[in-house]
Image (cartoon, rainbow, N blue to C red; front, side, top):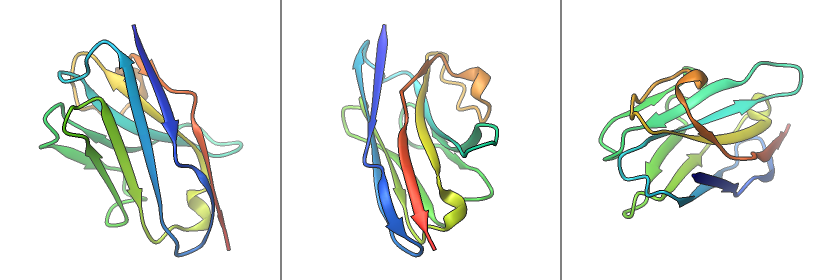
Length: 124
């Protein structure tokens, strides 16, 4: 069983930065692809970024390209999302997810394990 715990959310002014972390426990995740999704109030959950098991392949949603960077720790049990130039429309609960088939997919249905989420609020 895999448990995912996000941290690093908070309140920041527009133009600021935050770094989210996701720590995995349970099974080793060295062969799992991982991803970040977000959900704003009244909206569907949205793909943010995903990363391959090695960290060599990454994909980003159009809304965050050029501003967000996804990465993995050396032991592969940690994942990060560096968020720069934040905008009010980035306000959402951010979730990390893991896929044991390592599809590096951009759809939430591909992911088997989810964290509880961390709130990010960007004020204008």
